[in-house]
Image (cartoon, rainbow, N blue to C red; front, side, top):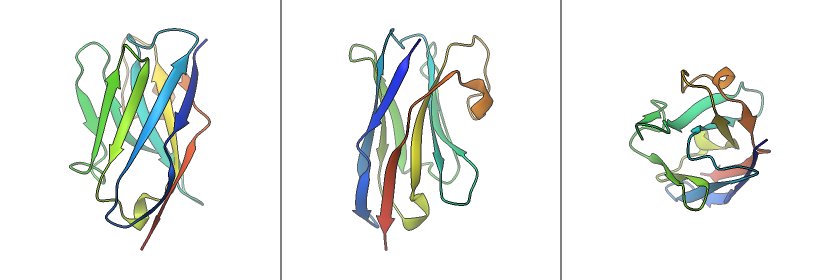
Length: 125
């Protein structure tokens, strides 16, 4: 079993930045595909970013491309989401997710086996 714990959320003004962290416990996530999703009030959970464990390739939602960066530090068993130029539409609970599956669609929530509890990000105008 893997436990994922997000941190780094908070309140920020539009145009600001935050870095979210997702620390894994229980086993190494170096061979896990890792992703970030978010869910705003009254909306469905949506894909934000993901990183493939083997190739290191990344994928982003169009709405965050060029502003957000996903990265991983296998030595620290941690995945990060650097969020820049935040706007109020980025307000949501952000979830970290991990997948041990060999073949996955990184942008699909059902691809992931493990989820964190979420961290709130609020962006004020």
